[in-house]
Image (cartoon, rainbow, N blue to C red; front, side, top):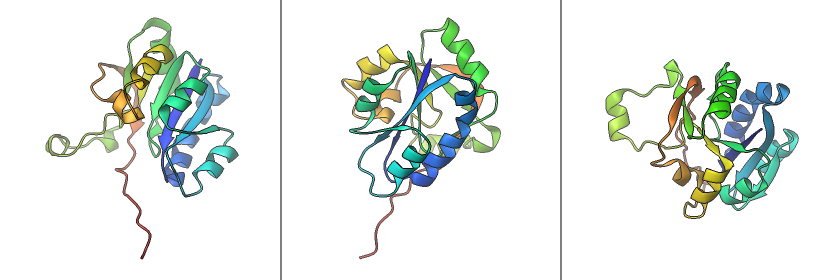
Length: 174
């Protein structure tokens, strides 16, 4: 029913945290497949995906959408964690809606109002539940999961997400 796509680059620790929050969905049969869409990692991202039983594709989100088996896709940032209760909210939404949806931020994960205004808000920070057809159409002009999520009208799910911390670029010592 649901394919989870996580677009990542050099974030093996964040990926592991996100995958752990999906276990309940896999056990209940809601998560059909998890696809890690790599955009050039040089760390052990592929090993984390492999050990967790995920499909691993290179070439970004478009390649992942083509591989997805579910009619609905859940796009997540590595490091984000779904809060207990997300499964029921996703199942209810996909049974009666065609519109995309986002999670609400967990209380401890909410950014103060002024900080949201003055910081670059990540469109994918709240996750995105989207039909495969809509995602495939959007992916033709969008080069990333973030670009698919940006500016997309979406409902709010009655479920929460712990937002991934902002990604820090790791620089190797010279």
